[in-house]
Image (tube, rainbow, N blue to C red; front, side, top):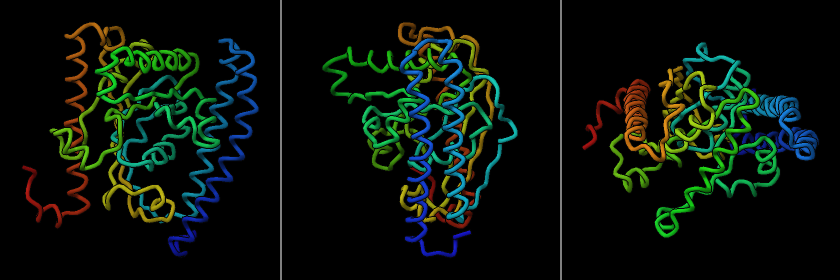
Length: 310
């Protein structure tokens, strides 16, 4: 509707709408979550958590509203018909930009149970939203550096404990647990530093996924595998607010989870760990090929002119 406005003005309007929407719904969220904090009992949580999730769903709907008002993005989406609102789901997706979160929330809101993300510990200090994520039981992960883990191996246990605590809460009310298997946003520098065998993806990490499966047992009915492609390049969040994201392509598929993945010991059983890693690597190879195909369809002339990766 406001797509005719200059990008800067659209960005300012979208930013203001996001701020007002967040302040309104987060204020209500904090009031309701105070009762859960005062009475941290499972029966109380079972009644209050759906209310908190409904408030978060309204916040997401508000964001979808200002996106429709200010954006001219063309959405190419397939797989929504495979989604279900009941039960528990594990969602897996590639990660390129902060925009990914808004894309996932926009498309999945009220089509699957409330989406809960694993967040970096530092994000708890984000004004308003950090407290909202805490109230919604989003798990905060410390993500220690490789050097720190080598010096203090016991630090690995912190994230494992955080995952287990979060999943114990998720088990009370139907929830969708979001996992960015790459662990960080894709960049060419990270891709080269890793020596990633994939063309469009970083190496996946199976640890958080395996911990979630182990902690939630057989509640997960399926894996919802999501692939996000930005044919014009992954946008920065400000570019997205300004409407400089001409197309977003999303593919979703509902995949079965091997039954024994919910009972194996990823940390102590090397054979089981290798199976989970091989399963995720196969999924990642298929995702990488899918991204190549989607980009080739969006830019046939560019793809024909560029040499294959070395």
